[in-house]
Amino acid sequence: MGAARAAGILAAVVAALVLPPAVLGLDNGLALTPPMGWLAWERFRCNTDCINDPKNCISENLFFEMADRLVADGYLAAGYEYINIDDCWSSRTRGDDGRLRADPERFPSGIKAIADYVHSKGLKLGIYGDYGNYTCAGYPGSLGHLQTDAQTFAEWNVDFVKFDGCYAHPKDMDKGYPEFGFHLNQTGRQMVYSCSWPVYQIFSGMTPDYASIAKHCNLWRNYDDIQDSWASVTTIIDYYGDNQDVLIPLAGPGHWNDPDMLIIGNFGLSYEQSKAQMALWVVMASPLLSSVDLRTIGPEYRAILQNRAAIAISQDPLGIQGKRIFKDKGIEIWARPITPVVGEYYSYAIVFFNRRVDGTPSQVSVTIHELGMLNAAGYRTEDVFAGQSYGVLYPADRLKVDVNPSGVVLVRCSAVPARAFGRPPQQQLQRGGRPFFTTTRPRFF
Image 1 (cartoon, rainbow, N blue to C red):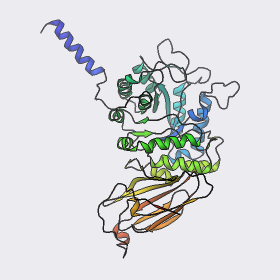
Image 2: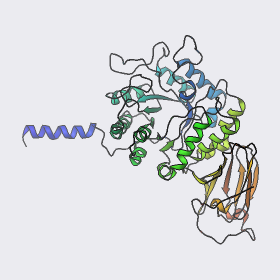
Image 3: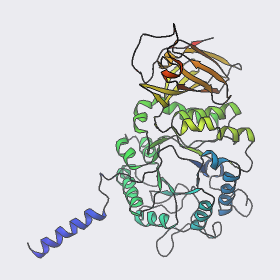
Image 4: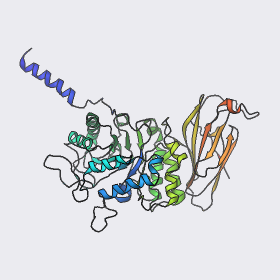
């Protein structure tokens, strides 16, 4: 073998070892249930005016305060563990060493000091980057610096990376996002990887390679940014309902569709609408990343975010994303299979969603078997927000709920083992099997 040929083969072997193979997937063992935490963007945006608005500007003080509130006010105990910095944290230019650096005036202690602080509180730190030349707000992007930025985040002890896609060509993302994930893996530090990969391709007219996206990302954005309005929330809900056949098979432990932040407790949603967002996000197996001022949120909205029964549905270990099974005349029904699984029967979380605005609650009446629940021993049924028990309902029993305008009723139907209640007389349907969902039309009064 000639020296030149040997050198060429050696170079190819080295390249194969150091360059990210196209087939290499994310391997971090994280996000086995949808991540929960707090994210700065929707509420605080890119407010960098710390002279005139020091309490609300993007600065280390804001994140120190929010970390304190997550712990002191019960959010961490409820499962909200990530505190995530979004855009506008960095200097306008990289350092002389080519590395990202925090704005020295707004983040004088540096990102690692924030990480150390939140870790001391039992929390985890997230940070924002962008695959393109610049972030969406015009700060340095990671294009050309993917390995360096992944290593920098690891050295700062970051636990979560949100990677946006402004100022990048959508066609390049099929290579670029997996490459950055590869570099995150290579650091040896476990970091949740949140991608904006598909949304930029969808808006450019491309069809995303969802198999690759689900393989390389822990969560990913499919649709536009959420705004502080009911119209924005319902538009996102519509998108996920209308595209559920494509999106649902992608979700599961370690990889989740992300409809964006919870805006509960801000300015745009009523109390009923806030419960609706929480219920739909829970049933869609969405990440629960709240973006609200935790220092001023009202207690009724805090109670929605910390509702343990709703969070238990969100964090169900099966990781099955729910779907819309009925839509007509302003009424929707969404259902998600959850634990416990009894024999061949799932338990279910059901959302009755009233999109009407005619000023009076709508009563929805539907039998348990019409919702796809055929367990002969029945389902222990509870209203998640009201805490009301309906007792054990059998397949032929009818569940009636009053749903407020632009509101929801979220119920948990837990399958009962046959040995607990036996077979109730005159209640058995002769159908077998366990359908995932049915589409029988409920009655409305």
